[in-house]
Image 1 (cartoon, rainbow, N blue to C red):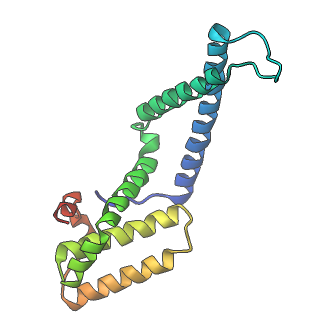
Image 2: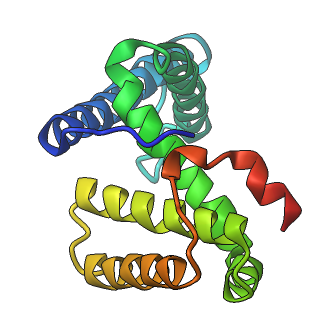
Image 3: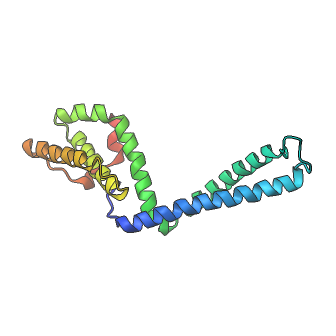
Length: 174
């Protein structure tokens, strides 16, 4: 995976628009499906407790709307508009994958393993990028400290780290 430059303001606008659109579509479809189901299969009368007895149809409407919205989002995520959002989403997935193996990677990095240092450099650099994009300013200083320490260590042992050399397959050996 190659690191991409993403404009923070554009990313935030797109992300907010997609989230609001997803929620609005989900709500609209839930009402639509619920209304259709109640019209065809619902009970006409109201019970003594004030309930119509159509709760299960409303829940089914929500489930159907979730399925429909997920299907729609799955289809439109390949549009160029979603490139930045999908890049960050895939990056976050990769961060989780690296994090699960982080202890083993750090152990190998302490033994001056080049691949481990490369993975850590990619991890910390992209983590900083995601934190900036998501306005997570609380932990950026610790990530920057980790980046600085990593590059100092690489310089001490005369390892060159080129983030373009990172490949997801490097994680398979951990």
